[in-house]
Image (cartoon, rainbow, N blue to C red):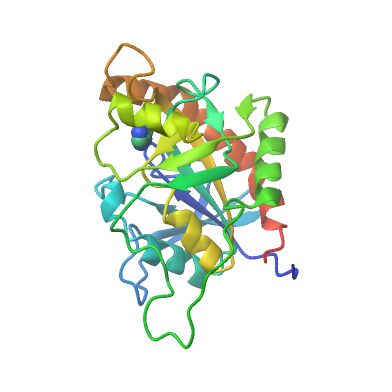
Length: 257
Ligand code: HPA
């Protein structure tokens, strides 16, 4: 690892987090990349003295479904803004018994079930093929920072979990969730990939801060309603915001690969 810290920390907000209240906004910048336009303008600001760049993954207002997000443009835009550490905030369904609605999870692994998404920067005009190591998809030092920040704000979080990235935009069937469980997945969302791998390809630290907004399909005898999801977002997002506020400074100090 080389120590190239001190860039702004990137935050990609998902469902329920299209803006950041604790962020003193300095400016909003519409940018473009060779991969196209990112989902939203970049909001540049400061949290607790730490420069932060915020991007709304689904646009602001929320309008881009998970399979249509231009993940390459989003990551490239953050990279070009100097970001080397990224927190991806994701709404998820809970599979593990500990991961009920409003629980915050900091997963340590993922399985990718998405298809047809532009999921690499290494595609055209290559001098040689590139296979990046992706054994540990989430930055362990960044995970530690988030867990410690949760402790500092007295919020119980799950410090483990295998994130299943599904294609969406529909939710899963009960049988699909049983299969995810057999595969070893603990939580399921639609936006964790290819975001994590694109960050890795750019050599950034990437960490997922997941908020459980529903029990995954078939985990209860109820169907999943938007009203229930919205209630869990209302209940849980304040904890996510507190963690982001408490972690911005230490995340800004991390070195990157
Ligand atoms: N499945 C997939 N993605 C999700 C879910 C879910 O149950 N809840 C929120 N995002």
